[in-house]
Image (cartoon, rainbow, N blue to C red; front, side):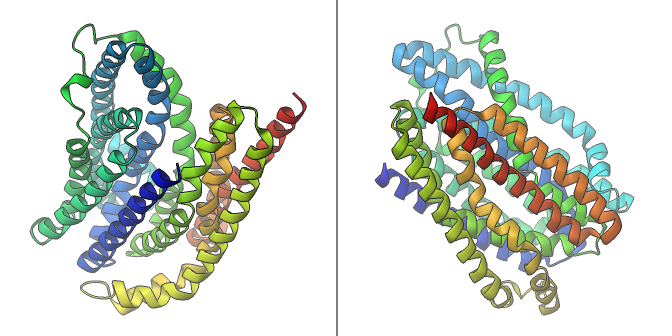
Length: 428
């Protein structure tokens, strides 16, 4: 477990570094200009959709597929083929419909910007919604390799996708501008699929069209989608609230949020990878003392590491931004404006680092529905209170307050839920 967790962590670290390099290339190439503002606004919702699919479909699909694989491999092949067929068609139709309503979505999210901005965002958004069927295919193929105990295959595919994304931007940006970002976003996932294509024996064309299986997976998957979408809506909150600011602020805010979330998320990824499998094992064996010890230690270490990394970044980020990002169309004045936004991300950065660690005991106890409801409540509170703060005090205080409410409502709420279920485990 430690060895596999270590290799996955290393892959994740490389993926994070590639994403950071991509951020540097994009920032230097396009600068804090309206074209990049438009793309960042357009990509927010498709990015959340991809993240939610990657983060939830495997949890819904793999337990059923893994059980069928053990009992009857032929049944498992039929199940994989059936879900691939129905979910791909279903997601393609959803993407097609969302393409039509993208002007409406753009207007709701970015109503403070002009008509030209809203229209351009809607056009790019409509193209990027087609990441949905591609990400579903990639996730199902990745689940096949997880079931085969090949844990490194899908993370490696995601690393290759990140490298493809960077390469496409470098090649296409001089020719088609920010549309290179749109194309790279979609091709990134397409290349992941090529790397996780299962061998032909994994599929079965015999009796593979089973509509009942499709309905079953939707019932299991839907609560996970709702809760995870709420949890991942921090980017949408930032960019929607920032739409009333001057040109370039979407770029500045995106840059700082990426630096903090990638750093604190990366520093705790090893804890996340190792904690959940152990908790599942301990709870199944009713070895509660070990489970409680792992949970307490994981939370203390993740909080300490997140605080430490956040403070280090606050000190070093202004220097790093000037050294790495200034150049091309991104000026020193842009760097100074970006650095001025760092203090507002102090608490959100800590929240990004520890939230998943606090959620995992509930996931190990199969309390996904309760966790989903908690995250939905957190999003509603964050958006409503943030909107009120935006009305009275402006977008920047609203963004900081909204993120704090979103993240720490989930963290504190999950801790309260865990204490409740912990008592039930002790006295059962």
